[in-house]
Image (spheres, rainbow, N blue to C red):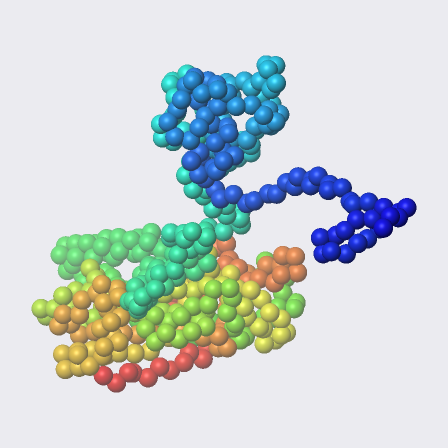
Length: 472
């Protein structure tokens, strides 16, 4: 049966009108497959890497395996851009269609880059071919690229660049030693030595002291000469009486001087920070709060303190060891002293203003804070205080058979404190700083107290807490 319209039969047996459709050529598609990092090894680069292997004779063709110098040179459509897996051959030339030409300068190299974005010229392992082949091979793992944060860390790093965490039990002794080391070496914490505290013998002017000694020596010589020459003891008696009076005054000031200065500080009038002028020496009383670096007491571990002091005393008998070079027999001598203070704030009772007291960063401070006995150790109760034994071990101190006494004092946050210093106003910031020169208390004639010099900021705790003795 014929028809004017052309028709054709499909593969399913159905007849349809029209001419059969001519099969179209399939457009080649390009696919990109993520290749693993080869580390510069041609054997791991697949078929594409085998096309660009440089032979030993400088030709363009190289096969995987043994090198055949007589192998024909393979050319193709890749003459425009050459891709190397871990190797570069800058000395080779390529011909396409029989015409000589130079290899394009566009080259892609796998491997790490230097800081300028160029491939690193790092040779690793033997090079293929003779010595006339110029090639660069980059091999090895790529180091992790860490973000530049400016943070300085200590200790080893893991593969991600973070500090490696080490698990295991913590040593309490080591952590305490590290904490004590950090407190002592912190620039914001001032460590007050024993030589910096008030002493009448140290504060009395040395030239005046030796001048008085010289006058009395001359008086004794003259009185003895007159007594032997004319039998007149009047001058010698006068010199002896004067010497006795001066000796009593010196002894009185040595024993009672500290208590007299504490009374002088208590009687000194409080100033109002609102009306205080810049550079004025004032005394301010109020409640203290911690600054940026709060302290902790050494033995009892009292937190949030602005001032701490812990002292260890030893009693020396007739045949006992001395705690220090100046330790006399049948008396208590100081063996070790730990005293620290840092910057803190004080709220004035008079005006309610808050001022920053600059006692940290090595400032000069004269503290008058009472200490209380915490532990009293003798032969009978030596093994009944493990905390005290541990405290001694942390500081490498031996107990032996000595009679020891531990005292501790502190100014905790919220305590009432009196501070004497110079007012300084800087950009609406009210501060109390140490005076440039020592402050003199003057003579207290009613109590026979000679003038004393107070250096730096004077710190006095009005309501020092009473610490009970730990039963042992």
